[in-house]
Amino acid sequence: MWERLKPVFDEYGEYTLCQSTVSDSIGDICRRVTSRGERTELIVIGGDGTFNEAVNGISDLENTLFGFIPCGTGNDIGRDMGLPDDSEELVRIMSDGEMKRTADIGELAVYLDDKIVRRRFNVSSDVGFGAATCAKVQNSPLKPVFNKLGLGRLTYLIEAISVCFSSKPVTVKVTCNGKSTVYKRNLCVVVMNHGYEGGGFRFCPDADYDDGQLDICIGNGLSHIGFLRMLPLAYMGKHLSLKGITAERTDHVVIQASRPLWVHTDGEVLGMVQKASMRVLPEKLKLLI
Image (tube, rainbow, N blue to C red; front, side, top):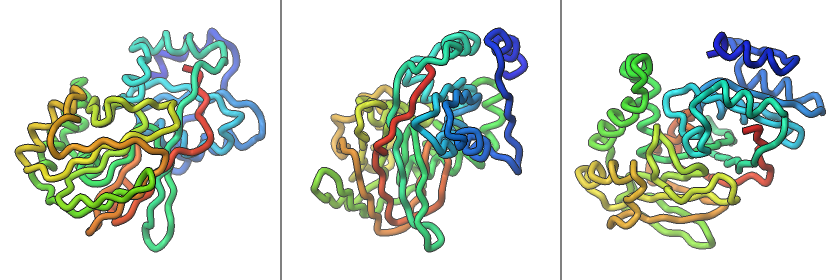
């Protein structure tokens, strides 16, 4: 991707190329280049997980203009923002250095290894089914195969079906908008900032990444077959009227489960937790796209 885009970047003047390594991660690079107290135009090439690492690394959101060229498996951010598929066109759009729009940033807070861990997210943060699917996708031998074939989203679908039949319902208390609700046969709590996740699933089809709110989809009391039947409807965003599906909208939610569940931010799995808190940060992400 870089070799193809380099001539286009060269048309627009000076820039510094940074490439991540095992010892110098995307987050490390972004933290370093945005901590100088000056205006920075930062353009990242990668998938939604790369976007997540970059945003977690930005230390000065006020002075950073962020651009993104998607080339990952799911590419849910590009899909939701309606970004052109032509990467060269994207470079040209960003070349003027002007802010085109803003986006909310979510923050997950959990206890891991006896300490609180905070992690920003852009697309979504799930407890239960979605995070368990991401955990399987990260270790799936199918992922590199399907990626090479340009069918990366199939990995999510196949692993989602696998998790669907292996998941056991759990009691979950969800607290938001001044009320707490207990769901005794819960399979998933999906908290979304963007309208797509997992390669195109629309669990919260009305999510708006710039409205200062998080959208929540809660699946409760569904059998494994019922949950499986719900998935294709969720891909089309037409599942919210189904029995057992609850939708909420809030700027802060706390989720407490009766046993540890997988949790993720933008597909990056943090581990298993019993309690998680998600909120919208007061700062906005300033976008070149």
